Image 1: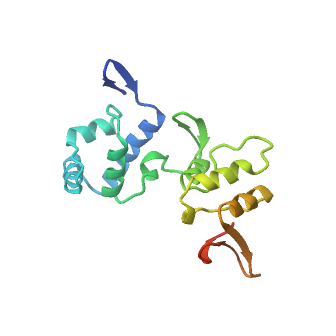
Image 2: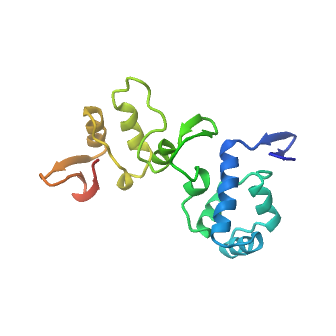
Length: 183
């Protein structure tokens, strides 16, 4: 079955993101100088068995890549999962499963937890604030303090903004530890 895999009686098409994963898997495997057999052996050694023919089918977008396989592949190929999921560029627009066409730079910023994927026209900053609160664990958040809504979201999350004249930073009130710098 090209571009489809049978689950029960229903064929599930591999979408645009699955095709991007297929392209990136091929590119990264070759960049590491690995054959499908060598990648298979490395995966098995890491605890996630995957046959060379399974890898070949993934690279041809004939087989789905599960979440577990994606993370194992990223670890063995020494990249982050985004390097498999997203286009290998920050230029141009790309089709993304469930979203449609999106600019590659925006995709990477979204995947890196820097911004929401889409911001409604006329947004008051609440989309950014909501994204910042839920996209990353507390100590890994990257706040963009653009307006009062963002500031309030940070304060509600137990943080305060400190501007010492040299830099602006976020301090977690519970332990007064330095937080990430504010853009």
